[in-house]
Length: 90
Image (cartoon, rainbow, N blue to C red; front, top):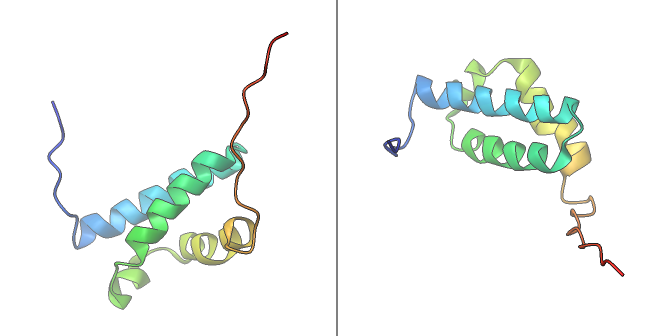
């Protein structure tokens, strides 16, 4: 069964942002950079839709990781990920 797609709002949106940041951090700890980057981008997109009051509900540890520490490694000033080339057999 397909899950019904509806925009999140209120406490559900705050919970989803926290969940996505935690998932991104777990990928980071596992050294899975591509998955971490993807989840971080999704979390940041949702985070930017929050009101200032809702942003205050996000734990500070998660906000710091999302906005500052991860920016150091995934920011625009960094080299973007390269496509993996297929190995040629001879």
